[in-house]
Length: 139
Length: 304
Image (cartoon, rainbow over all chains, first blue to last red; front, top):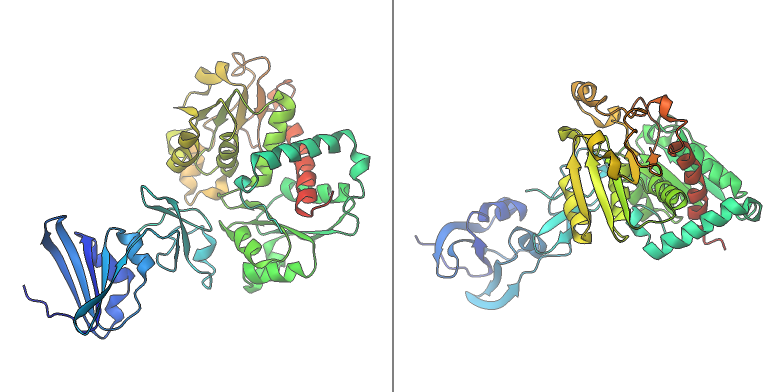
């Protein structure tokens, strides 16, 4: 399988196999005009299988969203076809407007101007809860 | 400027201090009769409530303060579509402290993020009801004389019962407390309350559907109402509403010094025949609630 190398952009590597598409949607990569590749189930010595996302364009990526989906992923910044920066991902303490609260009883379900805020409650299990109603983050 | 949104916003030391103030208020009410002269409490209740609103208002009057009250959401600007944030900013211009009840979970938190006065959560849907927990804690302290070494039975709707969740969270901070969770299978305590409060505290719990079988071990029996307003489906409510009805017969095997609590209002889950039993504390609990709200108002307004 051949994917063109990137001139200026981002490679999100070491995504747990199967989570690439979730990340694609959360990062709203479908709204970009530049080339975006999702490569699924790539053989990996370390991980067995992994997903990779390549974005050929200078865009702001929400690092927190990547941390939420897979804190073990890595982010490589490419300029002029060269790797210029590697960013480590950590599980963020707060997620702002990354996921929506699905609890119909939550105040954020009716007051649309409120930020959707989730707070990390259990780092080991990666559990986030809504700041307002404490419902668990899903999706 | 402090607000009270969740009972865990208060440390154990702060709760101990509030219990001491509450005991002093009960012993010397005249000493507190003018502590809040010139201060105004606004009560915004977007959901039906009698006792909580009256309790807050009575508490403020006992302290010499005044009350601004909106009786229901239908008569407030929320009916015109005003956001909670805007309402909180507006009320900050009129009052010194705000007590808010709202059907949406998290609404009082949003109010506290936007108000410039202390906000008290007076119940947000099925989520939190910290001032009821303050009432429960003072009841336990005054009637049992301690917060530790207790076996607490919680009976009825443990799924949607916000007072149950808050009481468990608060009691988990004291040593050697055992919880006995008595409910129909459909209304069991949500697992997050167990995994995030009971288990990390090292306390034990037991789950059962049989109230009479566990009665002899209880020091406190906390009854709750199956709340119609928490059900999306009326059939489920009708099927579950009469799951537990406490009668004098069921109390035969209970300890002599056990106390029976209930956040009120009750429907039929405690028979009126139990009211004269010396172990029945639910009306005293309402009195303790008013006293603890006084202690809370003093604390949040930083009145010495």
